Length: 633
Ligand code: CUO
Image 1 (cartoon, rainbow, N blue to C red):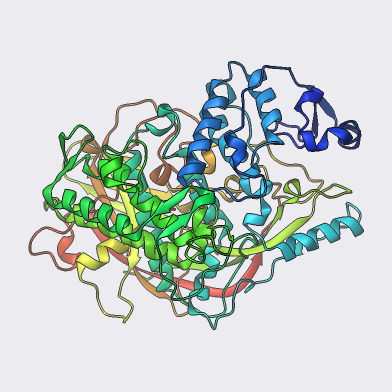
Image 2 (image 1 turned 120 degrees about the vertical axis):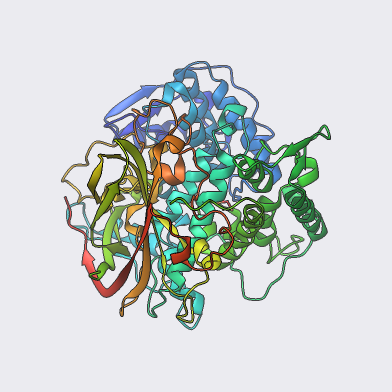
């Protein structure tokens, strides 16, 4: 009865569907159901009767099972359902198909496929997909919280309800050292960004969905930045942290388990650890020889500019991999092996853990170990590339603190009476700030790209970095084009203009983030726009004493950066980690430039790396352990 998508400006809709569409098990109460939900509806939408395709294969995944794109069988049936949805001739037919499938196929599978399709069909560009957190709050919050929400809704009338507070330190205690990073790993905005990234860049499905400009390289860069940011946060350890909680259906992973050969007939998975080793060895051999072999036995050179992209598709792997049967599916299977570490042969009949699901994978510390390993493989390749050639303070403080925000999660929950119940959760936030950059242009009028990064100033022991270590720690903060007059120029740029972040309201799009009764602002173009680093995590947490950091600014010649295309399109925000929808990646340089490669000979410190178009400023990141309530609009 909740619509699969929401026509703009209305969220009380009920579908009048042909009785054939009601799932067999509920046919006997079909009419009562309509009456029950129809009462509240402000709009009824008739559903057209169409000839329905067979869903048998797709329905082999039970409705109660969890769904994982990493599992080849799930991948196959999701490809089938995406094909069916993409193939519907009109929007009306798609709606009929969606209504029919909704109560038959696995809900996670259904939600994923329909989201991908609404994101990619030409005729659905103005439709809103409910946020995954709203459809499946249990992937983000513990069942105890959700039970409290239900109880509250049952007892307290609309208008008198208060937010349900999510306690800090819900998932573990600080006895577990890894728990000190829970505030970051379990940050809802971060997990939504990661989930969206994979929605926008699916690794299989119809060609036009996978074939996107530099998708393999973006897989490398976006995940490399996650690792760099995670490491920065780790260097900011401060005890007594934590925010939200892990989903209930996932099995825990305890310390010191190791992966074993998988043999799970029910999931159609049989894979040996030795196979992973073989894939790994072949990938390394390819990197060391600078060539990969495609399916026809032809060699493809891993070039300076495109090699990372080829490797990204090969390692992830996506259907753009030049030779899947030989190089395999290393990264995806790493997720699978780790997700089943507690029950590799299904003897306990247990489903996968959080690693099996993009929505939740990044909550597990081992995600960072696995992705750091993947990142190391890319790094080996980058080491083979030539270094970028040489070209010719008052204390800056960034402040971080906790913020509490409210979210309405009740669409994904079935209870009566309806009406919103808010959850109040705690996340990291920083004080807005402004960059003032002085550039001396010794040439004529020209354009440049201003690239801003930040890294910790010292390693975990407080010692100065070797540049070859520090360069992997740089996280991007912003990237934008500047017009430079001859002589001195001052560039003023606000932190909230960052090219990698999207505002809080967009991360949590169409969840009412303001108080009940005060109205919601127009929902933005939000399908693709849901991808983007959450703005509240732009600045790493820092420490109470002030974490010494290096702020790096560089102006590169726009002549070599420019990509000719019309970027006057909606939602170009967040492009650094997400690209721009249906466009080329808006920067011709290798992603991560200038830190993606080993330094030129003789450079062992950051200072030695600097050329006249670069500058480094010391910056302190100071964390204050106070909590601020978000101003409600
Ligand atoms: Cu995003 Cu492994 O690619 O989780």
